[in-house]
Length: 374
Image (cartoon, rainbow, N blue to C red; front, side, top):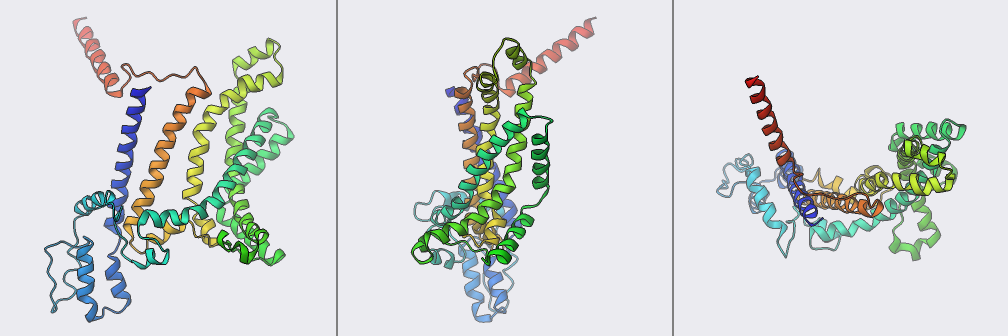
């Protein structure tokens, strides 16, 4: 187990580093210089030229040996620093105790949020995303598992047909369409605008109004994710119920309750564990539509707003955070398999891909020699 965990952790670190490299290179290559963009929006005022140049130089956007000329104030713009060098500076900034994960180009971003670092800025908005995604996940997962199990047991019957029909309908329906319909109903029937009320303003807006403002985005997320859970669980239950060991259990006289807890629940729990937590991380990081429509100040909006403004360090922190969360959650889920099913064990002797590949080459060589002799 220790060797297995060591291998998985090392692989996780490599995965995080590889994804960080890919994302950084793509963003750094295609993103514009935010200082030049700001300067352009102000009309390329001559008195700002040297200031923009110095800020670009201090943030490693242009080469350090670049000189500024008052006669050619735009000549330095195309002398960009190498992406490889910028990545090296970024890796160094990750471990900076004063400014971890680097700086922001627009200091107003941190000052408006009353924070001093990028991690603090990110976690400042994370609770608002959790308010929407966590209840949505708990409701959709619980209801999806329940309906999926019933649909699996009633395979081919009317209930199964209705559940499958609704599941396919909501799978095919884009979430922005569902959100638009819900907003239309809120406006036309209840006269309520799509607005997320902040928890800190409960005394002003009232507890009931605040919770009511969260209900509609939660409902949209539940509708969007429920169908996936139902379909997945239903298919798993059908697979188990049609397996040979369940048929043998029935022939031995076991009742439906015993078969469910001894065979069905145990066998669907492993693929469920591998699906539930990663699906929640997907909800947490991918709620752009919901946060935009309901003006939720969550992390999805933080990421979306960072791209057009060229805030590469905010993008990189978000990428590293969600990637780390995903890969280490996968490791925890894999370890939980041992407790869900004691029959599962992790063997480490002679199981590496490199060893298996070498053995394959040896066998292939011996086979060719034997054929040559014959």
